[in-house]
Amino acid sequence: MKTHRPLRLLAGAAMALLLAACASVPLEDKPPAPPADAGAASGAKPADPKADPRAVASVDATPRALDPLNDPASPLAKRSIFFDFDSFVVKPEYQSVVEAHGKFLVANPNRKVTIEGHADERGSREYNLALGQKRADAVKSRLRLLGVQESQVETVSFGEDKPMALGSNEEAWAQNRRADLNYR
Image 1 (cartoon, rainbow, N blue to C red):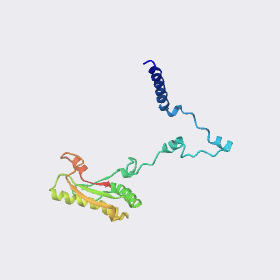
Image 2 (image 1 turned 60 degrees about the vertical axis):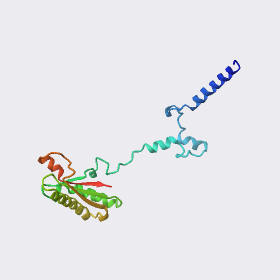
Image 3 (image 1 turned 90 degrees about the vertical axis):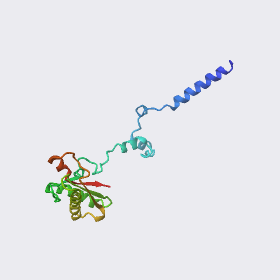
Image 4 (image 1 turned 135 degrees about the horizontal axis):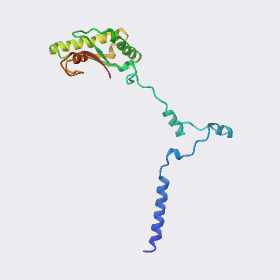
């Protein structure tokens, strides 16, 4: 058994060395890259930035532009047009919202939008479905006047079925009289 002991010690030491060699080293512990002009002074070819992981990291660190539909600061972040009671006329304060979406759709002919018309709980189910459809169609008409293609816009009415606000008061009703733009 004594003859196996040195082999075990040797195998254990080899395993420890192997594990130590496989340990990852944090990026901060790596030596700094040579200056960019160091290769030029020695006559060597400049390093390929695609092969240098630090170069890729610096490219990836560049901030990317947000999709305007997901940018909260964009006018396209507003996706609801609200209406007066028993009306499907787009109010002047929502013209800029419709125009922003119209410009976006004209500039992006592959994008499509569904306009969902809604109504508050007052009125019959049939009346509210018809009013929701008229609201969605009114927004679609405005978009079409701005040059948006027919194939980019679909309308649907939910009537009173998908309220934004719950309650039976003017505040809730005002939130539910709307048309929502949903991009697909």
